[in-house]
Image (cartoon, rainbow, N blue to C red; front, side, top):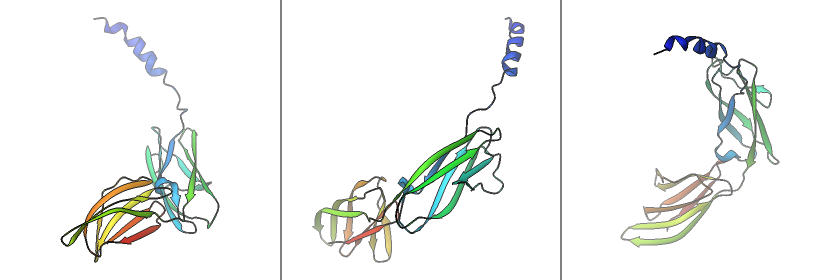
Length: 191
């Protein structure tokens, strides 16, 4: 084997490392679907990632870099913002790596003042229980659907979409609660 002929080639490859010119990746993980209720305080969470490390994170020019996180490859951040009562909200998220590469992302937030709608399509009674079939619709995204019986809350395992179908077996007097991505709520008593 002629491995001794490969050494100069390997050294050449190692010495020709490319400079880092790729900006950090940035994104939001909350609020879900970008929906916020007008006039409410909103908790915003997101992340910045760069293989070289993250040197800084800004939202609309204000630093949101957590203390002691500079230089880490993945940095999660959170902050609160007051949503206006009307109009549009657009956040500019920026992150920079140690080489000065800056990534940016504009994120529009949807002002959602409309609660989800619970549509009961069918109710079947069997003894003291009711089988309820229906769907929950929202103009942005349904976050969760919960059955309340007395002081007990049982979440239904449903996807987070604009329209979700559900079925539940509940006693008389149970309440279906639906919450959208902005925190708007709707309820419906069964039967």
